Each structure stands twice: as structure tokens, then as C-alpha cells.
Amino acid sequence: MLQSLSTAKTSDVGQPIAARGIADRGAADVRNFKYSIIVPVFNGADKIDELFRRIAETFDSRNCRYEVVIVNDGSTDNTWEVITRAAATNPQIVAIKLTKNFGQHPAVLCGLANSTGDYALTIDADLQNPPEELFKLIEPAVENKLEVVFAKFTKKRHALYRRLGSNVIYFLNEVIFGKPKDLTISNVRLLSREVVAKMCRRHTPFPYINGLALQCSHPDKRANVLVEHHKRTGSRSTYTPLRIAQLVGIILLNYAQLPRVISNLGYGTAWFSFVLTTAFIAKHYFLSSAIPEFTPILVVLTGCCGILALLVGILASYGAKMAQSVSAGANYEIGSIVKGG
Image 1 (tube, rainbow, N blue to C red):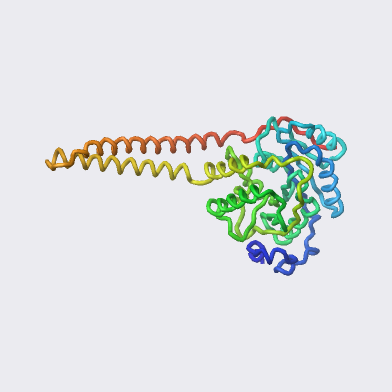
Image 2 (image 1 turned 135 degrees about the vertical axis):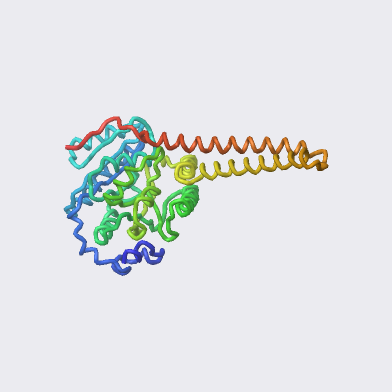
């Protein structure tokens, strides 16, 4: 039953959940659990009040316990003032201010680490993903004890460069994290408390939330649910082509085995070069074999290539060890925490 949801094709995802082998939504008592809504925000002051209001209306109408963990990721506008003003009268708000802009993924990880819900839901502050849609993720997760539920959008309202970047990132998730081709990942997701705990125990200087979620969850306990995606209004997106390129680099350098591959390639090339150089020298001096005039030059070049390849291997190994040592440090730094009430 779970497999039919987690591997549903695009045509299946659009059907009612019950029609895809999932029990009726009404059977899931979502009131038995507490939910943490994690919201990273950077310069989003114009949307904060509406975001809080719509989240409250959504969860209060279901009589569900919840908290909103909003992480101010180094905003340069009055976002923090708007957040703290709202927190002064709303006990469900946990406001976290980072010391500088660390990026979306470290901000989300910070929110997860400071959440207390049985389930955590991540959502952007720009309201492109309506808070009213969150129960589409909650209900199948509660009913079927899923660990991860990714939102799949009916129609993405992103610019062309973002869609192209998403395709590259999807490919990397398949190759590096073993993401099934028919599982769509997104920044709107539900994570069980167990998965959140595992993700927070992973030490990496550059966290990638979807990759960590895939690494820390069971393949049979993932799912997609179809949700709405609205056009962005107001403040401009900070998800630029440069940010997409940086995310691709983070995935390749921190989660792929690229340093190890480069290291092994360097060592292998070095040994081959040294063996070839030794063979040329032995053939000339010990076997008294006549060799062409250009052979000494070839021997020197081969030896130099071997030395360079060895250096590449050493540097790649050193880089990998440095990354491991750096990973023990913090990937975000909290300036202050304000709890509503």
C-alpha cells in the first residue's frame, strides 16, 4: 500500500489518495500529533504576517497542536522586527535569528534542530506554497506512518532557469542519493521526528536537506502528494542561477565520492607513469636495447606526469580529510531565539 503511493506516476498522484490504495483521509486522527512548521526567511517582511495568519487558521480549524519555527537567515530589511512583533502575541511562534546569511538549507536544518513536533513540515515564506495545502502531506503520513512526504506541484510557477536547475539537481539526487525516478523532491516536505533526529546527527558543513532526508529515510516510507503552487508576488526570489550552481557544487563535493575518485585516479596514473618510466630505463640500461632518440624526452615527461598525478592524489585525499574535520563544526550560528507568548 505504501509502495503504491511512494512510486506513483504523475497520472496517479493527481487522483484522490483513497483511489490509489490509501485509506480514507477521515480515518487518520491527525489531532494526536504535534506539528512543527519550519520556515526559513530572508528579506520577506511583506509576507510574514499573512503567513502566520494562514498557518494559524489552517491548524486551528483542525484542532491540531502546532508550532511555527521561523528562522531569520540574516535578513537586511525589517523582517526580524516583524517576526518578533508577531511572536509577542502568538505563543505558537519560535523565532530564531541567525548571525548572518547561511543559506536556505542550513537555516532549515537549524529550524529542524530546534523543533519539537512529531512531524516537521518545511515551507518557504513567499506563500507560493499555500499553508492550506500542508494537510495534504500530513494526512497520508499519519495514516500510513510515512517518514517523508514530498509535495509535487500541479504546475510550477518558476522561471526557466530554476526549472533547468531543478532538472540537474533531480539527476544528482538519482545518482548520488538513489532517488527513484518516479519520486519528485521539493522544498515543501514532511519529515517524521525519527528522520529529523537522524538528519540532525549528520555532521556536514554544507547540509542539503533533500539529500539528508533521502539518506535518513526508508525507501518504502516515502511518498509524493500533489499540491498547488502559486505565482510569486511582492519581493523577488533570492534563488539565483549562482545559488543553483553553488547547490550543485555542494552536492558534488560533500555528498558524492568525487574527492575519492580524483584521489584514486591520481594515484593510479602516478603508479602507471612510474612503472612505464622504470620500464624504459631498464630496457635501455640493463637490456642494452636501442631506443629512438625521442625516448629520453618521453621518459622525462612520463615521470613528470607521474609526479603531478601523485600530487593530485595527495591533494584530493587531503581535501577529503579537511572536509571531514570541518564537518564537525557548526553550519549555522544562532544569534537569538524568541519564543512567542
